[in-house]
Length: 145
Image (cartoon, rainbow, N blue to C red; front, side, top):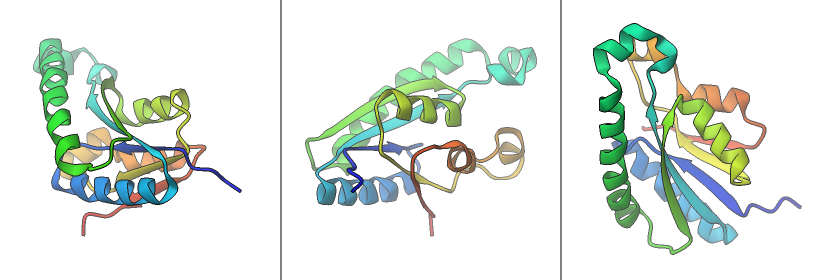
């Protein structure tokens, strides 16, 4: 029988993130599992020098610093259990989610399917879709509706 001990809950701090957190907590309590909450600040490095010139590297470090503050509040507001850890990383979102999952021996990923629309989706694509396609462990996706 499969034992789920570690659940990864990637979030982006949107309204949907609270819904995803609720599902993750419900499953973690039922399975006596640990939750790892993860936020990844999107690195623009893979999009070339122009994006680095436009957005700047200092902006990403500022985003990471702010995300660490927001993460503390998000965890306090959305998780009542003690078996929760949180982490803020920077990089290409799908790759960092999958890398974190491997490193932390994650058994299940629970994430939202919403996110970017319009031009942002064309440029960045869907992180959830990429994680589902590349993951070697089960991924539960939560729609925002």
